[in-house]
Image (tube, rainbow, N blue to C red):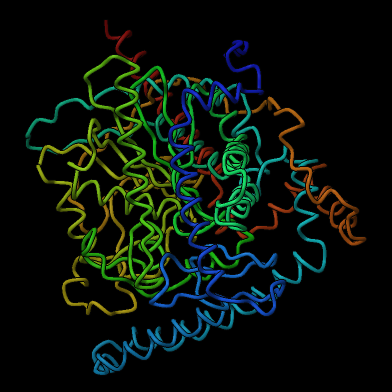
Length: 612
């Protein structure tokens, strides 16, 4: 296939910032509002808590009942910042883990006899996780802060990975190639089309669109490319004086600029694809997982995307590695993974006075953007809303989708379409999975579907461990260690030796249905190959100091293993259970399926022609 030459509207990487702020900055201001509220709360808290050691490198946290606002910790610069973790992160994890272990056996001690396997798992898994995470914390801290690991990351990214983060640096062509531009631009009109009316029939049928799936994979990968350090800088500007300084307008302009710059790489790549982007919520953290929205100014579509965990963010690992579940009936149903649930919905898990509401911020942003798009496009048609995310982002996407299945009326001027989750872990228990399936059938003609895309042996799709069985779930205790079930309809990318590239099956509580695989709007059969680099100004110039002596040897050895690119050499050392989790391998697996089904379509067309 002949590659089309890039059109001028995506050729220039330098966006007009003022035009962007004037026409599409509404959600940027909402994001700023959230940061300023947090900064004011930090300032008030700092005045109440007089610090004796302002520059200590230990983490402190306060959450007194008489204080207003969220949980905070003291960062390395002596400034309070919002946190999802508990005081002294590892100690908080240990205390929470053993509290859950004690309460489980205190209120259900008979499980030692009625569920011996679950009891054994509790006794072994909890202490093992505590020890392993302690070892991981020590090794990560020593590597990043004392051995020059952070400098090595920046060096490899800027010199071999087009300045991208660790999730995408091994395959920059996924985000920066002409083929990806063509894929997304061709697929946007499909995303904007209303769903065809569903008819009650003797067989349930749904359509899995390969072009849409591949597009949402690249969007889920792109959202990792935010510069979190600039978000922290914006917060700290206001946290120092609570926004009450002598020049508040100048301060707000500086914060606005930093937030805009933090998302600059995402915005620029999205602009090549014909999309716009804005961050929406920090999800009770600062610079970790967050939520953003993509939208088109030419088509009535919004895509909500969640970023997953940063590989080097240990504090996020502690929250996400929690085994315990939380009662989710306030916003959802059943019980769900505590770390995932408390990231998206307001809870008292971080203190009774914590009023942060990420879900409210997301809902407000989507509804406001939908109203804005309807006005700009001059249409009365509802805006099509899709959801996507990878890894932890996929888990939070599943919870947001579940909420909107339960309460679709909360979306004004919008209609909920499908959710494509990439490499998602299980998020809830059997009650959650059962009610989720019920809401997908209320009414029975509802077409909204959660597609759970699994890549071969991806380990994270099999965590947390659970029976994931409707039969066992009927007899299992609510507190059973293995009471986790998946939701939605699985699309599993097969191994190369298997005859079909995709295996399709419903989750344990989901009713069966016929899945039609379609190629969608994009018909290219070539994987993204060329790279259209971003301008050098997009590269991270931080930490460009002298590398430690050992890093040069690592670079040379990895380069030999990776045919000249040390990043490829490093990724070859990943266990296949981890390597299959990287977004580019999901994209490649879906592309192999595209080739297979393209051949089937061609064969069918030739057969029809021969029979004429």
